[in-house]
Length: 193
Image (cartoon, rainbow, N blue to C red; front, side):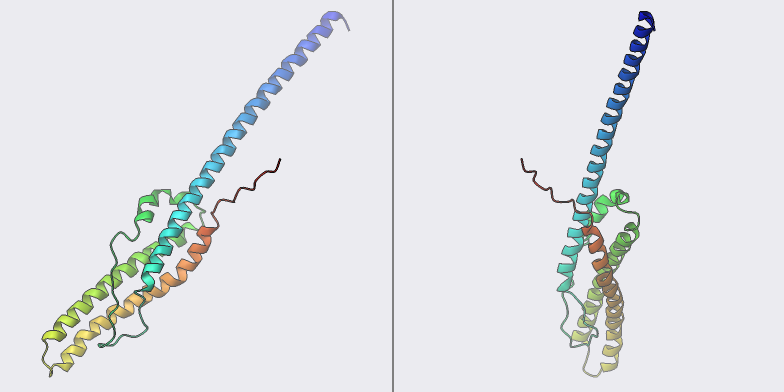
């Protein structure tokens, strides 16, 4: 091989090496960006899951004081139904981000929140029925027992409807909370020198 041919082969090899290095560097940088993006998405999922978990847990803790008994009687102790309308504020303000969670978890989360809202509405309605019944009972004459019993039927119906939602929420929340805990970021392990 002549000197010119050797130089041409060496130049060609240098060009190939440079191209390969440039490609490798670009690939490495691109994959590094992909890793950063994946980690950022994982962190966003973890934060959303933690926020939803906290809201559901808080609702359940507050709700325990209002938990309905299986049966209700006119002389039963009335449970305080002090629910505000912003009991799902975290969910509502982040509902546009729910798609970043695992596709199989989304229907369960949405269903749970729908039942939480239904339960809160049912408890508010039950509270209204109690108010009606107690106001009627306070003004009713002693001989109107039949009317009192008929008026209390509305309380019973509202109570039974709320119990249905209560049972659904209690069952569903355990499953959803378990699923949301799986999004927690791993605890970093210190690297020893």
